[in-house]
Length: 320
Ligand code: NDP
Image (cartoon, rainbow, N blue to C red; front, side, top):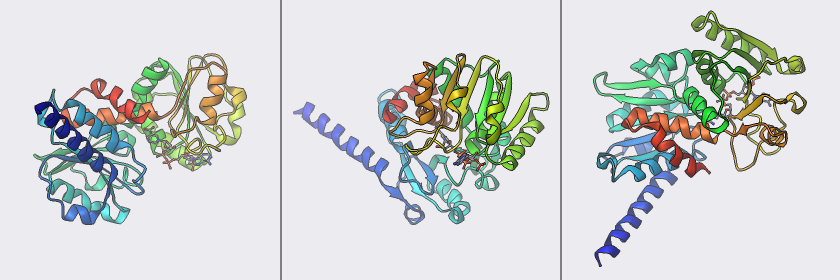
């Protein structure tokens, strides 16, 4: 009888966790928020596609016996419009949220509302993780995207950024985080390849201000045939090309050669053209799910002090 009751309680808990992960909440829900237990959330617009609630709730659930103090923690998703963000962040603090993740379009827009920024987030110029700071009475901004990428590349490809020539496709938010981390970890060189020159030049100027001695160059996407690389080279796709199954490879297949490894930050239920062609050539290649899992696990570590190495495998399992 007791065994059945325990099983039933576990079942109810699973349903409760699943419901938390599925629903899309809004600012109106936040204003009426009555949950007093520690809450966490990802904020963005659109947000319905976000896999973060699944990953984080799986981690809270798996840890509830080892860390009973985390048993009541739940992670939610909120659709917050750009014009709502400045008002929403203090309200999340007031309503006892302990940690937040930011995604498109809030990673840069949130910075003026934060009480403090980590050196990493300052160099990247964006925050993807906010940590509650009661002493400051507000949010501290962190960025785990770059380190998440580094850990993912290491685990999936056996590639360390130190001493590696990095060819980075893209100059948007993800590229910024990856570039800053690669330079901080002493990559041999960094070549930024982007469609629009202006965006890439702004990124390179910002990076040079923090890393004046590093070798950083720009190549327009139109001139990519002129790319010359030394070994070991890591090709990183941080453009949006690859998100849709029909997207062409952002890197010309004929330039892929022995000694290269490929990391594509995009992910979906399909294999991107870039990853597919790299695998055809027997080159190590990975998609962005491992980066998503690692950036999530590093955020989880900032909030709970549970090492990212403990939670990243189960977060990755949720994504696979
Ligand atoms: P941004 O909008 O900030 O940047 C988009 C980049 O893609 C720009 O460099 C842009 O070039 C380029 N781009 C867009 N469309 C094309 C195209 N048709 N042809 C060539 N280049 C194009 O987006 P993010 O940096 O936030 O995201 C970029 C990618 O990274 C996304 O696919 C996202 O899924 C992925 N990502 C993955 C994460 C993970 O954990 N795995 C985390 C964050 C992002 P231009 O400057 O010329 O417009």
